[in-house]
Image (cartoon, rainbow, N blue to C red; front, side, top):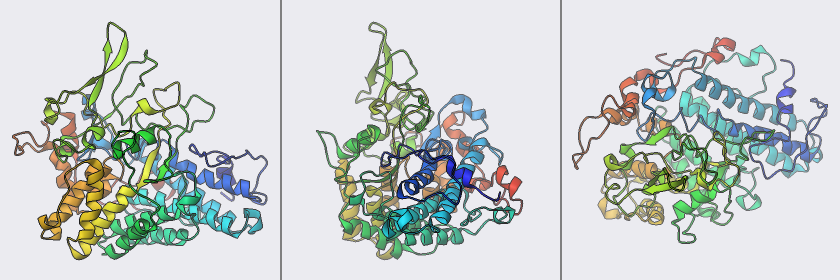
Amino acid sequence: MRKLVSTLLLFLGLCSSCNFLDTSVYDQLGESNLYRNEASCMSGLAGVYDVLGYSDVYGQNLWGDLDSGTDILVYNREYGKNNLQVSMYTYNNTDATLNNTWRALYMGVNRANDYMDLISQRTDKECGGASKKAMFIAEAKALRAVFYMNLLSFWGEVPLRITSIRDLSTQLLKKSPQQDVFNQIIKDLSEAESGCLPATSLNTPGRISRTTVQALLARTYLWQSGYPTYANTWDKALSYARKVRDSKLHSLYPETDGKNGYIALFINMCSNKYDLTARESMFEVEFYGNGLEKSNESGKVGLYNGISQGQVDDPDVPFAYAWYNATRILFRLYEPTGDARKWWNFADYSYKRNEQTKRIEKLYLTEAQKITYEKIPATRNPGKWRAEYDPIRPWARNNSSINYPIMRYADVLLMIAEASNEMSGPSQEVIDAINLIRGRAGATLIQLADYVDKEALRRFIFEERTRELCFEVPRRMELRRMGEQFYFDQISLLKDQGVDINRQLIGYQYDNVHATPAINIGIRHLYMPIPQIELNTNPICGQAPNW
């Protein structure tokens, strides 16, 4: 383990749809001659970004099995009731999904550590100038923070590795308290803020800009203010979110070609079209191709979490497994009509073969079917990312080029609303931020006079975050930061046998696979267990509580 240069050699010139690079492949490289010019420094940075696109990270696992089995997204195969998988809460610490995601996230951490270590040894001239060197280090620090934000979201206490692993002594680490992990994330992002370029200097949301760093800082302080640390850093969350707003570099994507701005935003994302005017999508993981080339930089967005389509003989319609369903708990959060997000986040059609033409056609819901969740047929699949807009041909069954957002400006506005409300209660600033979101969606605007205390508005903001950001921000963290009991209560709604004001079942029948997560969940599932691959090489780490 003397040198880990091999980890760098694997990714030089590669990245997940890193269209901001024109890189070359280097040969015969070692620590002494690595990163001696700006092009190779950029290639190394691309290698750190590359990990984000792994199937074990944003290519699939983070938004798939690791974040389903919650109140808004569930695995939908009936045979899944007996599966050993994370979304069914039937797993242990040898589960392949957990182990692979853990390994990939720490690979990202280690690549960032190795990269920063070597870049810091290079002269400004070798890096293309002092500002370029600062930029390289800043983006690597921000990426390390993103990897740790994901580890924190799912595991809580984790080993804190901030130096290159050179020997066993740097591999052996105990789990760090969550507050220490938060502190490191904040340190990395704070140091990265000045070095990252303004959004106007980047031609893609695939790289981390200065305002993205500020938004990530706001998110970190927001998370830190909740369970279990309760750090009360709402003021800092608000300060950084306001910085993004006041920069005037970002806004909500507007109505375009007659399409609601929310819908148009995600059509663009599915179509690999970047908006460099509104810049609502502040940072997204880029994917490229259909996986049929020598290098596979594709993901599975829109296929595993898309609209079900099982036919393979119509070249004009993409195949999609659609392993997940959006739940009736989410469905009830939307107004019956008006809110454009409802029938975008829920698919309002299914695919059906026309036996006369032998083509696959869309079968749209009737207005009568749209009234209640019970009357919706198989189109309960989430429709946020739709494979039909993927421009890469031919379509592939297991690969797409659809990007995945890590940060949107809509989230910044909702963080302003939440942090401001927590600090001083309902105010016009809170209402205005929420109404920007709701106005764009076509939902009913709210009034300050309707909210007399922060508690009532707190719940509304939580629900608005769910309506707007479903399937994007880690749901487990969104639930857990509201409190341990809240976390379990929300997931337990899946098996709630009560009825709502419309006499509709709140949850699902016990024999329905959608209820299985709530039936199986226990106190130990508040966090994921430390994977066995970590304990095998780091026996002093310690296991997560109750595992």
